[in-house]
Image 1 (tube, rainbow over the protein chains, first blue to last red):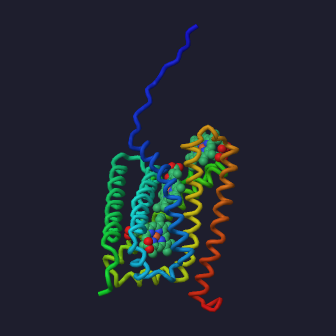
Image 2 (spheres, rainbow over the protein chains, first blue to last red; image 1 turned 45 degrees about the horizontal axis):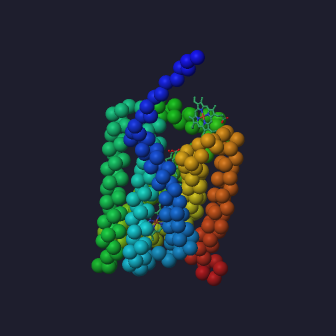
Image 3 (tube, protein in one colour; image 1 turned 90 degrees about the vertical axis):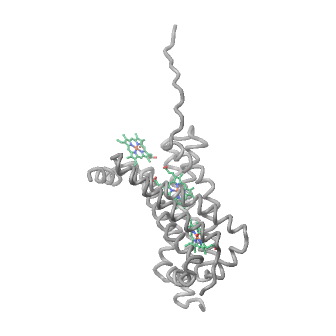
Length: 127
Length: 139
Ligand code: HEM
Ligand code: HEM
Ligand code: HEM
């Protein structure tokens, strides 16, 4: 008796597959990063105790700067890629999709650059 | 335009029960958090670019309106995070465990964990707001 089985080569992961994986792997990292940051800043410290001196005090320690850098890199990339996924469900034309991808890429690049410059430059005194 | 209509009516009329609601809530909370994060990265970068204006931005966060919005933000982040972990667990670690009853059950557990974290956090934030903005509790 012969069986009719056929093996198909597993397709190479394309960009969408990788972005799908990134959303899930970054999720695991974001739990401690985002929950930690939010509970500390918003619940334990609270906005009424946050000012320039507070940020200067925190960024004086390199550990918190690295923490914020990871937050900036992963949370924002995850968020912008998420916005891309949502918009993809609404867009059917390839041309519009291309414009949307480039627009979001530029938004991500510019906002990440601004955040990174501030993080590296640190708090400047009031003139 | 018809694409927009088709997708949106799908959001409203699809009857996937727990899975449908958690999908919608995951979308809305993710988008809300992303919107907040864009503003937040820019206002934080004032410490370097416009230090004179940083205090001004923080004063906005201290207002009662933003205080209420923050309680909402914390819900968004908690729900999105816990639900995202649930999604990642079933997709990456245990796809074999996927079944409709289990999806329904785990969705309810997700909501429960979110509320258990969110209610005490909101209470603390509300206390802070009443203390600083309304002079309650001797503030
Ligand atoms: C706290 C930890 C977080 C976890 C565990 C998490 C998890 C996830 C997962 C697994 C997905 C993919 C859902 C899918 O493809 O069906 C996702 C989507 C998304 N995430 Fe997150 N996330 C977290 C934080 C964030 C943050 C901080 C933002 C905003 C900056 C964000 C914005 C989004 C958006 C906009 C989507 C797309 C929603 C959709 O496609 O319906 N997430 N998240
Ligand atoms: C309303 C609640 C929040 C408060 C009060 C708050 C407060 C702060 C403060 C004071 C800083 C300055 C640096 C520091 O002290 O570490 C900061 C930076 C940062 N926060 Fe938040 N945060 C909140 C929510 C969030 C959320 C939900 C996210 C992620 C989704 C986030 C992501 C970041 C990032 C990426 C930076 C670094 C920004 C840069 O490099 O310019 N924050 N936050
Ligand atoms: C023609 C399109 C679709 C068909 C034929 C379909 C069919 C199904 C079936 C048979 C199930 C399992 C049965 C059940 O949950 O009771 C299911 C579950 C599910 N579907 Fe769909 N679906 C469709 C579109 C969608 C869309 C547009 C969404 C997102 C908005 C969606 C999200 C889900 C989710 C989240 C579940 C899990 C439901 C649960 O845990 O109860 N489906 N779908």
